[in-house]
Amino acid sequence: MSEPKVIVVRDTAALADEAALRIERVALEGTPERPVNIALAGGATPRATYQHLAGRCPPWRRIAFFFGDERMVPADDEGSNYRMANRALLAVTPLEASQVHRIRGELPPDEAARQAEVDLRAAVPGHPWPVLDLVLLGLGPDGHTASLFPGDPALQERERAMVAVHRPDLPQPWRVTMTLPVINAAKRVLIVAADRDKAGVVARAVAGDPSIPAGLVRPNGGELVWVLTEDAAAEL
Image (cartoon, rainbow, N blue to C red; front, side):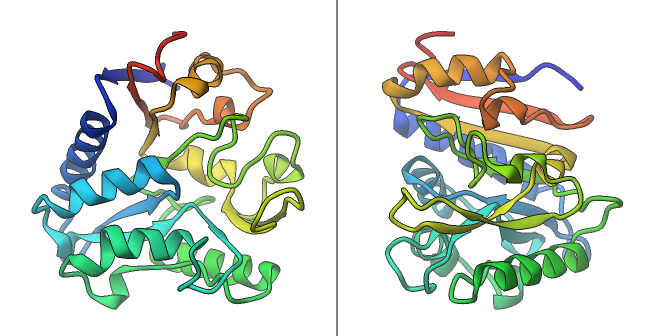
């Protein structure tokens, strides 16, 4: 596996533009017959990226969108990652419904995870794991990424591509997340972080600290790129 590439930009607007540019470049590799498969993230920093991407003109028919994780809430709930991405990007671009593969947060968690895995494996080629063209991730202050949290059993999962996660301390305690083997099977992983209070955990994750989930993201033969603001990169 190659060393992660770190790109430091001035502020959140520059970060969103850089990340959107990188997604657009991946889209150019697709064709209508073989679209590129991109997994989206939740969170404020990815939202700005989606807004910048919506203002660009990638070949939209060459992209299929998936989600790295989702809260177990209805699709129109304020906590839904799909709702956020739909408002910022999906609903304001010329995408067909078949190009968007959402995790069904209105279902029981285990059923939502099962359906999401079936959908992912049917749509994305690769064995033993689907090989996504790009996985976009955010970063939590505790080092979590997607809905993979420190100490959670989901970090040890080596058979399933999508699993249910329960975090009773969170506002939306039930989640479905993509597992580490799928993330690390991707051709590219792009992690974005913008806040100064995440600088310490950013430094640990970039260094590959195995005690935090983001430090375990190391694509097997793929590319790992961090796009950081100067604030988030302050402790590198």
